[in-house]
Length: 327
Ligand code: UDP
Image (tube, rainbow, N blue to C red):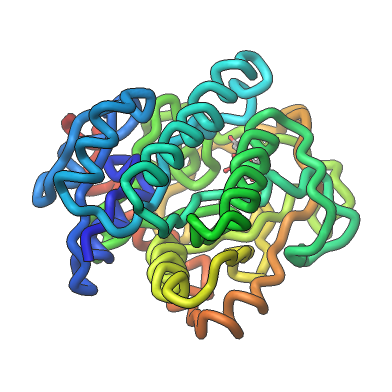
């Protein structure tokens, strides 16, 4: 089966591309390379294009005989989403509508969508179950929720089967530590700590140490990139018989910012400066997933439940690629 991987040159999309190929799918990457890296997917076919380019999208879907689309192409920086909300709506919502319209026109009816735990905003209870209210507190989360609703209504027409997968904190490197995380600018905790361990940053800043958690720092649910991707594959298979799938994807286990820093110190054997900094606006104290639904319905099995192993794969990639991807 030929699968179009939109945003397939990015961190999650590139890992997904490898996993699709390993499982006898034929991935074709569609990416404008505004954020992604061609060198991450050099073994694979790449269509360099924008999701706003209706003509190229329709041509690609039709000529390549695409049967399913996985969609990872989006802006993800929460802070930026509050500075430039319209850009987020354009890229994350309007471009996705364009993609879904092209799929409808070309008769492509399977869609796996990269959503986020940010759709829940400040949840009333953790671990988070899928039914909790969707009350995003930033435009990033709101754009992902808008796409989920668009897919929902389109699925009711019978012309779309979709899965919306709400990620918690994706991290680590796949393919034996060879396909890693390289964002510019980087805002994610684990790559930032690793940069400090490698001497590329002066320190690691802890955004708030007075939260109501055991050590005062925020707790998040870190899920290895290969585990995240394996759930996508299972969801894609289930779309043969289901029109709407909604799953949280997380480990179900929380680690605090201080615990993550200690883990990187242990794994790398390096010490570095840690600085207490003010809270980052909009950070809930604890965000963990209840992923029971995905585990039960998809038979999803997490291979990396331990943070130590996850960090080992990230450390391997960063130490072997100190300057990130070359292009
Ligand atoms: N964080 C931090 N220092 C940093 C980057 C992140 O203390 O330099 C914290 C952040 O406030 C959050 C956690 O680390 O509590 C994970 O942040 P990240 O941006 O990686 O993911 P998010 O949970 O926001 O999706």
